[in-house]
Length: 248
Picture: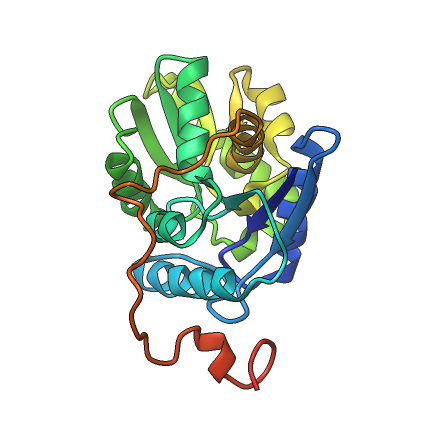
């Protein structure tokens, strides 16, 4: 089984961190391929960058040459999952939804600890659209930008723990979800100090992908996620018309 893990931003070091966690989480015999868009924002912190990244992710998928059995989209709260489900013939797993689904199997309510406070409404909207917001006790921001997560691991863990403890003590959350792909690899440290289950969306999505592919299941194509209708789309895929990697 081969799982493609797609970091929605263009920061190579974050792609490497996400790849490492996915490989660590996968079962023996599962092959992980990780990539990122050929163009787009270095980090995603708002609706503009999120929508831009969604197009860049679809562009990458439209031009990706290797075969894979499932896709893991490694952006928390990012748009584009539904479009990827239309585009691909393999099942698609978004780390936001996978983290929340797994958290609800482990406790009555869960909380998300993410990056900047401006990301909170975007994540709440994503959970609402997915039908997962009802059991979300809170979404809390650490105040750290996405790229700051890699600058000082000790500070990152400390800020996550501050918000996670508040979510447990004040919001009555029973499970914590790490709300950014850039937090990959921090689950065990946070869980050990917090004393409640902590879910990493990348690991959860890999596990769900293995289960679904193993059961021989995939996305329904009869209505909502039917393939795009054939038509002319000017300059698509975009990367084929740009200079540099993937272009002329």
